[in-house]
Image 1 (cartoon, chains in turn blue, red):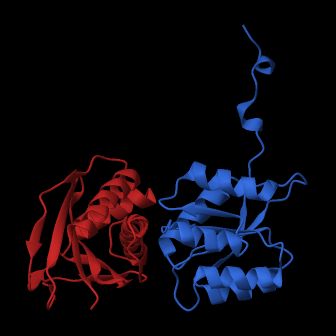
Image 2 (cartoon, each protein chain N blue to C red; image 1 turned 60 degrees about the vertical axis):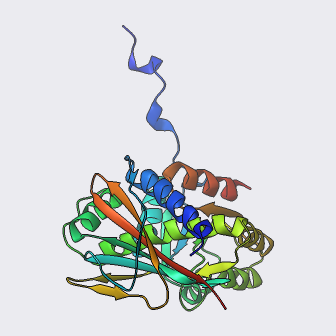
Length: 145
Length: 154
């Protein structure tokens, strides 16, 4: 009979959300929908990420980013939101911190909008409906770049 | 109303609902409704503005809304609370956005407004000067009617 040592321990994989130094990546989730904010937060926390802030519109997002900086590693940003849309908020965050890692998450997948966001400094663009795998892969990719 | 506007809504409603509900969805026969019409109890609405103007209404019974929101959240939700409303609104938003993306590829230029949701009994919606086309979608959780009213600006 094989001993336990001969099997690879499947639970030894380090969760995506943990940095090489052992601390979690710090994320801000920006979305005006309570459902979407909850969905993204659940996906991220299940992989060990630390969701340090949520914002329900672009204005709040920019303010919170400035408050948290430099203790923030990545922002997920919705586009269609009241008060200030996500593209404008992205531009303001990049103005403040040109190395900011912002990933757009929107149900809109229009080519020119995606292009506009990437030109404005977004590091990736995820089109909804969201699935766990897609979100985790893109975010890890951006963090490792 | 031109049929080019409708197909992208039918397609995206079918695709998005199938994906988020992880179940089979069946499309019923399209039909036209004019003037005022009753709505079923929960109605999410998304406005369209640009080359064309109009709105898309997602209409369903309260029990259907609760069942759909429960599946999308992975937990049983039994009251029409803020989370249920946000979930149904997001479903409407995803379907409309995917349709707008397709229409954009076909050369139509317009945007959508953040969605709103109405709940209540004996509600009715009136549309002057524009006919609404209804796309009924049958799900195991009940029927969702997608009610599209679009007209060209002019």
